[in-house]
Length: 257
Image (cartoon, rainbow, N blue to C red; front, side, top):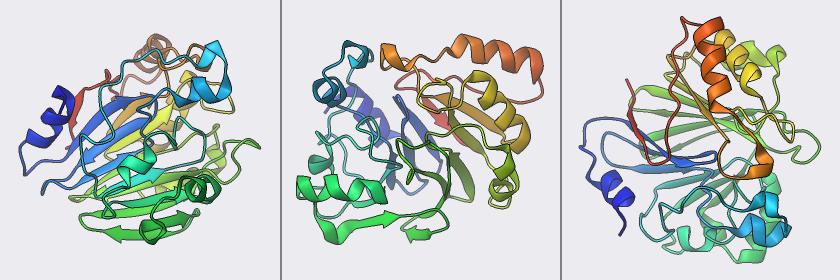
């Protein structure tokens, strides 16, 4: 077991944690110790499948698929840096982990022979309860490349984490999201590629939703995905100084208030 996995497992009970895995991947640990993962990318399958140097993995692999046993795994859409087909069979091999995946993941899940009994294919507007977690799926807009992609709101220990999923800026949906809030943490992309929010978009969404803390994601993994956390830092500090944010390093831990 590597150091990162050990730090997750030994994090003191009684608190709610968020761990950054890189790209759009995060792990939540509840106060009782249950583990939920969102959009883990642990392999280098994107470069292999796409055969494109722009998808070379630039961040280290800090977690193996068999290091942790998750209670819940969420895949917001079928792109391989969100539904990692090299590691998903290992994550699901225990036949205990429950996978909540967008509808467009179904074909790949069947090809991989995943344990179907523990899979729910989800759409915006659906809500599930699993252990310590209430999981609400909401609309996002990742364009024609992933029209069935979803965002997700995870409620745990009375705290709400909104992961926007890969999406462009849709301020017309702010009231829809606010109806599910308020949010302790909002996680949103800043790479501005493939229909995603850029740094300015993410800052605008954060200002509209007013989460206690905004965590930018989707940068640093692939050269072709762009994303500039320094730009996001400058926009937030200069234009929205009242809105708190945290640029998490890969492997960093946040205790959610």
